[in-house]
Image (cartoon, rainbow, N blue to C red; front, top):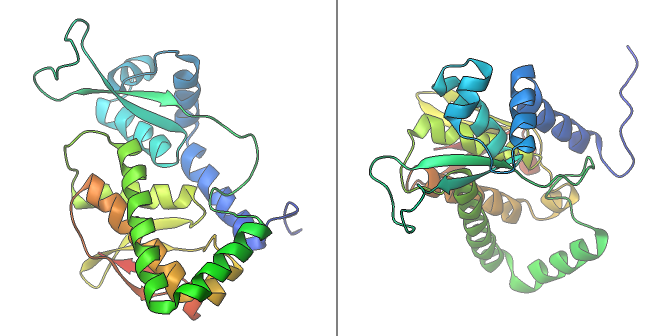
Length: 245
């Protein structure tokens, strides 16, 4: 079997991560049609509208929408009832899903150019390992909170299993090719790829702190406070990154 051609500017790992992100989001033909339906709607769509249009159970429709949201293809807004003056209506608020912008390229969101990479390396060296790890965790946490707010801007919390699945989808869209699984009686997020490339090899503990902060931040917004930890890490030579929650 012939080897797949890797686009210029992407390593084999990065290319595999991009393909995983795309197939995770659009591997289901119904999900692709739902995305196009949302993209064609100026006001966005609700899970109920998707369920009716595609003859799906509302929970199935919501699952497809959240897969697309976790990947960054759809954005979530809280629908307000007409004439409510901005106040929350009684009961659970309705979510509307709108299509986000597409850049039209197979580019990883976390891929940086050489100049920025040199600047980052210099800053990390100047900070020292301990302070750099603290800063990386804080930056990752804030970014994770921002991602969680895009996926679910309500104050309602999900189950830990649903929250972890949403986090894995978001990480996959960022190049980590992540999934959830049960390991030794606990839940874990397993990442097949690391989108930080050579930077992760040079600063493994800093990059892992950033990754850990992202996971903690997303879980904080989607579920509640947790303390994820890495049992395995690709920058340290392991085959996968395994974050226990």
